[in-house]
Image (cartoon, rainbow, N blue to C red):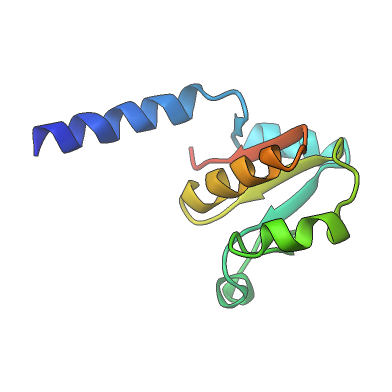
Length: 108
């Protein structure tokens, strides 16, 4: 039980120290610079409510869809989901595909 707690704490500390994780203030700044906001939740979750101007590309589809939606790998992209786990996984996928400016919106 203690080991599980310590591992979870390490993960959270690592997530908060990651420079690609952004908060709402940084979100606003990046959107003003023309960043693209992507909701990586399911279409059903997206329909239940999403951030203004966000497009829906579920994390399980992102690798197969991203090149047609955003061919410029230098584009600033902000990903978000409910708690940051799916968006972090999607971020890793995009970075492996060569996208350079991918950010993960985390809850404050």
